[in-house]
Length: 216
Image (cartoon, rainbow, N blue to C red):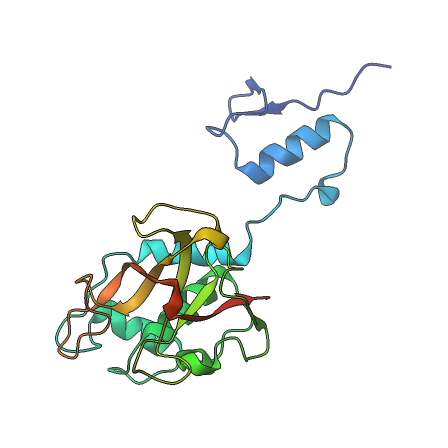
């Protein structure tokens, strides 16, 4: 019996060898390789990036966003706040993490995410130790002299030392995060007159109240 030709071909009929992203998406490539091995299409699964990783990707797209026209205002800022059912002009660090997790596909995002004191205490998320975070996990900060529990939030980038070099969590003296509603000036966390935005910050690990993992 003649062997069945299962080669992929382009529109011109030219036989193509699976492996080139020029022709196929990752999902299609995986299916083609399995097909050659005699595996049915429905049984092929492409591993998806963790939710926290996808949220971090969405957050990085917003890097450089800056408030315009007043404190906690601006075209993109207003969009972030409204997406979480908020009132334009409200502090938006919690709305920011809600926004990027919603874009990443989280099913647990609710209006309550806007209030930092609830992060880690809502269905679909859980708090873990300060040094047990992974990139994209939510970090809740408690600044000296601020709220007794939660003042600000952002997404974990890495555990670092005082020189901002990445180190194992157990050795870290600081954390690097990607935040919304944070001062572009490295010495400012939240301006009262506008000009905050989405950017990276490095803060002492002692300011971290908890790390939050989103489960779904």
